[in-house]
Amino acid sequence: MADTATQPARTNPVPSRLDPYRLRADFPILATANRFGKPLIYLDSAATSLKPRAVINAVDGYNGEFSSNIHRGIYEIAERATAVYEAARASTARLINAPEAAEIVFVRNATEAINLVAYSWGRRNIGRGDTIVLTEMEHHANLVPWQILVQEKDGDLEFVPITDDGLLRLEVYEALLHLRPKLVAFTHVSNMLGTVNPVRELTEMAHAAGALVLIDGAQAVPHMPVDVGAIGADFYVFSGHKMLGPTGSGALWARRELLEAMPPFMAGGDMIREVHLRRSDWNEIPYKFEAGTPDISAEIGMGAAAEYLLALGLDAVRAHERELTRHAMETLRREVPGIELYGPTAEERGGVVSFNLPGIHPHDVAQILDRSGICVRAGHHCTMPLHERFDLAATARASFNVYTIPEEIDALAVGLREVIRIFER
Amino acid sequence: MDDLYRDYILEHYRRPHNFGVLDAPSVSYEGANPLCGDRITMMLGISDGIVREVAFTGRGCAISQASASLLTDEIKGKTVEEVEKMTPDDVLDLIGIDISPARLKCALLSLDTVAHALADGASEPATHSDEGQHDRG
Image 1 (spheres, rainbow over the protein chains, first blue to last red):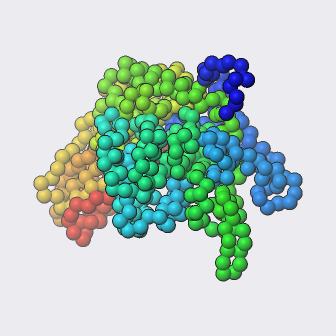
Image 2: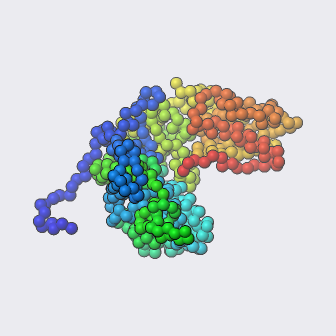
Image 3: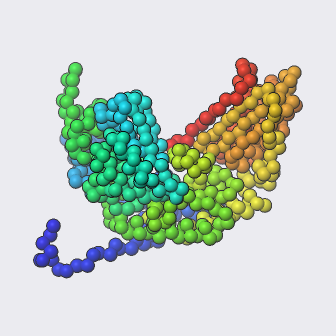
C-alpha cells in the first residue's frame, strides 16, 4: 500500500467509458460483407470472439519475423520468440491478477485446461466414493471430463439445480456440501443463460466444506474484471479465442502448490528436466504441463488480446456489455411479438441472450437471419442438460462483445420480425 | 428471395402429409439430430414387399419436417427394394431447394430414419433410438 498521507487526495477513478464505434475500426472483419452485400452483424461472440488488428499483427509478427521454437534455440530469433511467448504469459497472468506468471499453463482452450485438471489432479485425488459437485448449467466441457473421471474411479457427481430464472439454488448447494465433496466445479458465467454466478461466495462455502474449487471462466474473463486471488479459486480456466485472441490459445491458472504437486498430463519434450532410458525428472511449473511445441503464435496472440482488454479497462467493458444486454432484452421484448427470453435479469447476467420464437425452430431463425448478415448461434450451445432442464430442444442465442453496438441489436429485432413474417405468410 | 423457405416448403412444414401414427406398423424407427433437436419417428406398413402405408411423427426445423412430409408421399406404393435404393440426391431433388452443408443432416434425417427402419425390420420389427450426429460441443 502506498502511504496515502503523502499522496494527493484522489476520488475513486470512474471507469472510462468504452467507445464501441471507435474501436470497431480495430476489427478488420467488421468491414466485410456477406454474399448479399450486407455488412457483418456478428452476434455470436460467446462461441468465439472477433480478433482486433493488434492480435492479428502479433500472430503475423511471430510467423513473419521470428518464427522459431521456444526454450531451445541459442540464436537471435529463438531468443526473441521465447521472450515474447513468456511476455504473453505475463500479460495473461495480469489479466486475471494471478500472483505469478508461472501459475499460468498455456493450453489450447478451456476444455483442455479442465481435462488437464481432471486427468492430472483428478486421477490422483478422486477415489472410490468421492464426490464432485457441479451445476446444471455447466458447458459440456465442465461436465464430461468429470463423468469420465468418476466412472473410472467409482466416484459420484452431484448437481446444484437452478431456478426457473436461471440462478443457482444456493440452499441446495449448501446441502450438497454436507457430502464433503473433494471438488466443486462451476461456471463463472453461463454461456446459455448468461447468469453471472456469485463465485466468491460459492468458493468460500466450498472451502469451508473442505473442497477445492475449479471455475470455468471462459465466458467471464473476456467481459469483466476477474481477480483469481480475490475469488479465492484453486483452479481457474479460460479460452483465448473468446477474449479476442486466436483459436488454439487458452490458459489454466492454479495455485503454485497445487501445480507443483500434480503429475504431468502429457509427456514429451520441454516438460522434462532430465531424461534417462528408464526414468525422467519433471521440469518446473508451468513447463511441466507444456509438453511438445505449443501453439506459439496463438499464445502470443492471446497475450496481445490480454493487453488490448487491459487497455480498454475491464470495468468499462462490463459497463458497456451490461448496457447492451439491457437494451437487447428491452428491445426484443418490445419489438418481437411472442419472443421468449431465457435466464435472469440484465443486472444478473453477462452479454448473452438466448431466445425462441413460438413455433419456429431456432435453426430456421438463424438461417433466415444469415441472409441479413446477422450471425446468431442456434442449437443447444453445448449445454444439453440445461436445455433438458427447461424442456427445450434448442434455442437461438445472441451474444455480445466490446465491438457490439445497439444498432446491431436493433437489426436483430428487425430480422426476427422478418422471420415471423416468412413463417406466417 | 429466400430459396430455402419457399411457400411449398413452409406449407409442408405447417401441414405435413402423412403426419400421425400407424396402429401396427411393420417397421418403425426413431431418428434424431441432437444438434438441431430434430426428431422423426417413421412407421411403415409393408405387405408383399410393397410399402402400403407410411406415417411419421416428430418435431424440428422446417427443413427436416418438410423433407419427411415429401419423402413419405414419395415412398408410398414403392417396393421396399426401390425405397432401399433411394439416395440422398433423390431426397434433395424432392425438396427442390439448395441446401447448405450445415442443413444437409436436417434434410436427410427422414431418409436416414426410413433406411434404419427397413434395416432393423429385416431382423426384428422394433423401435430403436438413434442419436445420429452430434454437436461439436
